[in-house]
Image (cartoon, rainbow, N blue to C red):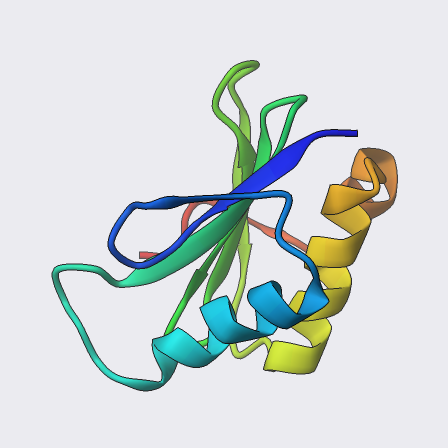
Length: 104
């Protein structure tokens, strides 16, 4: 399955491994209002965006499904969600306790 990430500057990271994903999340440790998030996108269009506040947003821009969000998600849990997304486990992700909207 194909997936990619965007870093805070908008550069694409093709099929990031676990170490690269951790680095992406670690980059959120400093505040940058112009570049507030990193994201992982599956080839199906599903994306999980992560913000320095701990907010994560799950959506599919291609199909119009979502957005849904969770707040105060720790980095370890975010990595688990990204792993599920990279593995194509969209139904599993969709069954979680998401709140409607993008959380802003």
